[in-house]
Length: 330
Image 1 (cartoon, rainbow, N blue to C red):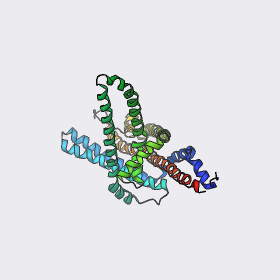
Image 2 (image 1 turned 60 degrees about the horizontal axis):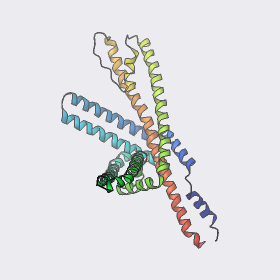
Image 3 (image 1 turned 30 degrees about the horizontal axis):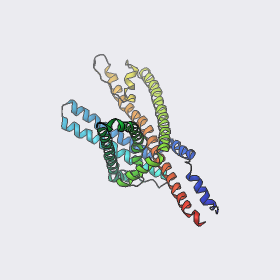
Image 4 (image 1 turned 120 degrees about the vertical axis):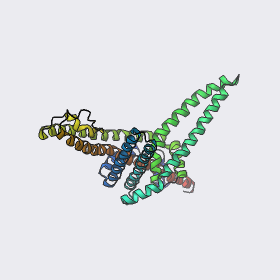
């Protein structure tokens, strides 16, 4: 039999294995997302806007103004969802090597295509519901006399495997990769088809890469938290000493932890300290938002890299398949 040409031979070899090293390098390179100023700005602004809307909703709910609370809560979800999609578009541009779009263009594009993510998730939820209905049907058949116990012998392993694989696919493919599929330009139907192919062909690789991304994101989050807590403690102790106010240092660190200070004994807290506590809460809240944004940026860039790594392997397999088709002609 004639030997296939050298380029086709290399493609056939690449078809048999997944380039783990290159994929892991791409995932770990997502840490560089903390240097992306445009995506950082968009995500920070959306988090701040969503946080403000959430605080307003809680205040309205405390006043028993339920309609306003519902509207403000919906506004918080809207800002957070479309802001995350705008940042995802910017990060996908970086990951694909495309010219980065402006912030205004990213927000406008997110408003135009982010609904595709929801539609794709809704379609996959319908498919999951149909699968659950099929499993319930098998359980119903298992309750029939005579054949039920024999059928249940097969239903038990099938149910365990199907539920386990479905949960794994939802965690490592559907949840993290639906957004990047749309950010890369797919429609809702194309996104569902792409996610289905990844589940069928690349579930193991996706699980490993998403696990590595979770580790990298956790390390970035831990480092950011450590810097905030250490710097915040030094800031609080130095502020109490320099400003000469008699308050616990923890009162100046509340904003760094995403909390507000509730003053219940105004006579005990010096009047001079109230303005400093308010200022520290606002400034600390900004630092808290920044510390929250950094691991989120890494995660969003990472899921883009995971998606592109899996798709690149599929493209390589497609070329290898073409080479195999041409092999008898060589």
